Length: 437
Image (cartoon, rainbow, N blue to C red):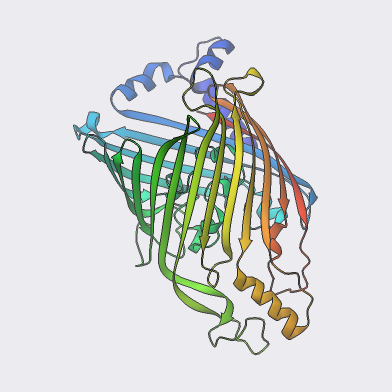
């Protein structure tokens, strides 16, 4: 983490936008930490080239609960480029986007908690990798948008307007997809080859559909553009509406994956995996599918704004039990923009619920019935998160965070050690800072 601090300081002090004497007021007033690079940034943008980056750094710890206690430091450096191909190549309505991540440090979930859902949405295996690399074409006066390349489904699908405030990863790409899909599906930290189409049927109704590689193992570098034949398809219908004279959005979506999935209860001979006579090799099931619904609702509008104030969200998702660890997902929360008279700050409270599948509960019951081992019954994992995002400058955000993880690991049976006793809960404290470079 130390070397990234020196890097950020170096970027600041080496910026062409700096005068010989540091003007602290000017630094805080500029839109990014490194400024306009002596006018070069503005000139590039006039030509259709936008360059930028950001750094997210955080420390998280669990002073209570979990298999063991400890603290971690982790971060994610992003660099990106956006090219307006209309300005550059006279290719009207075309746009190219690419970004890459340098992920550093180790996460609290992998090191200390052992829960199902990572408590941070930047937690991942350390490394440097390409993420998005796609071209987008707008047609029909921007009513139709086509995108092809290396894509991330979590950029556009199963997304709530108010949930991105929260740090726990399940409020982004939910566990019902991130845990159940092979290698997490087309989502952070590795995007997948694919295509996406979005059509505005009316000013209030939009349909979006995507087709992605369903490879069971993603290339760590992000440069593997091949498909092995398995595909993941997802679609979403979004409707803007007005409830109680306030804006709301309702989304209805579904997905299907044609790959192979392991049975959560039976082996290839249809014996329980808990049976001593079992081969221990789960039966292979072809294909998986599920659906979801999202409601975003503004409950109170702040004076002088259109959609800012006190907002709420609710997301629900479900899929089959026999081939998935998580059978049902629910999360919801509240966010308030502008607390304590600070217009650019936001405070929020949210809760998630991941229901362990009936097949895994049946497996635990077999362990008790066949082997006489008093294993706990798998049930659920939940996260309750209270967070405050404070904006110190247009380029600097600081965010203290408090989470309570209920039933870390969902009391899921560990066949290699059935006597493992799960933790009832874990307290997570964190502090995040984000800098727009």
